[in-house]
Length: 385
Ligand SMILES: [Zn+2]
Ligand SMILES: [Zn+2]
Image 1 (cartoon, protein in one colour):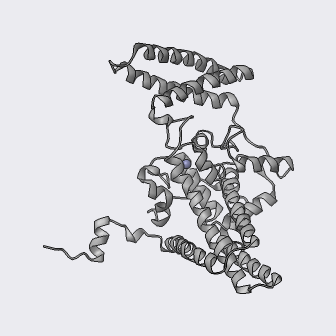
Image 2: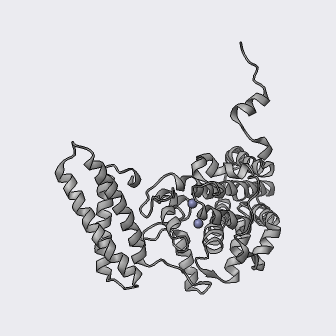
Image 3: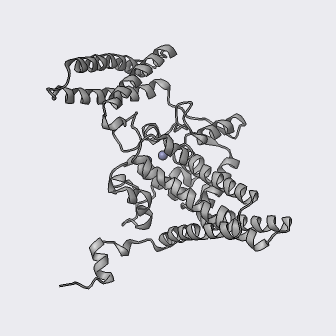
C-alpha cells in the first residue's frame, strides 16, 4: 500500500530539528547564495562588467577575508601579536562586512573549537559530518547556548564592544550600501547608467563577495579538517593543504595551526602561501603591529619528529605482522626509526634545557625526518597522503 508522504512525515523521516533552526541566519545564508548564483550571471550577461567593478570586488573581498584571518582569527582569537588602533578598527569594520557575527561571538566559538576540537563541545565538530562543520552548526542553534565565558579579555576592549553592539549596522553600511553607492557614483561620473552601476556594486562587491568570503571561511572548519596532510600531529583532525591555504589566505596550514595556535604564522615554512602572515610581518615593519609570536624552530621540528616516529613505528608493526614483507624493508625501516628516536631524544633534551642547536644540525634532522615521511607516503601510510 502506498503511503502518502506529507510534510510531517518528511520531517520525521529525516529527523530535521525544525524547532532548533536559526531562521534569520538560514534566510541570510540561503538568500545571499540564491541572489549571487542567479543575479550575478544575469547581470554579467545583460550589463557586463568594467574594471571599476572588478577592482571594487577584489578590494572588498581581500579586506573582508584579511579582517577575518588577520583580525578575528590571529589577533583577537589567538593574541598572536599586538596591534595598534588603526589595525583593530579596520579589521573590526571589515570583519563585520563578512556577516559572520561580531568579533566577540566569533572568538568565543573559535576558542571553544581549539579547546574541544573533534568533541561534542567543539561548535564545528567535524566528527558530526562535513556539512555540520561547514554550515550546519550555524543553521541549528545549540541548546542550551554555550556561555561566553572565554572572552573576558576582549570585553575590556572598547573597540571590540562597540563592534559587538553595532555589528549588523556596520556590515550593512560598509559592506553593502557603500559598494552600491560607489558603483552608482562611478557610472554617474563616467556618464553611464547610474542604476546599472548601483546594481553592479550591490551584486558583486556586496552580495557575491559576502558569499565567497563566507564559504572560504567555512572551508577552514570543514575542508581544512578533511583534506591534506598531518605532519605535526594526528591527535586531531586538522590538516595542512596548500590548495586550502590558497583559498583561505593562508589558513589552510591547519594542522600546524592546531599544534601551535599562538604562532602568528600558519604556513610556517618561508615558501608556504600565507598572505596573512606576510601582511602581519609588513605591518610590523611600519610599526602598526608588534610582539609577533613565533614558535622556536626546535619545538616545531620536535613535533614533526614525534609524529614521524609514531607513524614509522606503527608501519613497522604492520610490516612485522606481514610474513610476506621483505626482511630488507623491515630492517631499513627499523634502522631509520632507531636513528630518528636517538635524534628525537637529543632534540627533546636541548629544547627542555633551552640549548641552541646549530642550524646545520637542525637542517640535517629535518632532512632525515622528511625523508622518512616521504618513504611512508610512498608506502601508502594513510596519514601522510
Ligand atoms: Zn580547526
Ligand atoms: Zn585558530
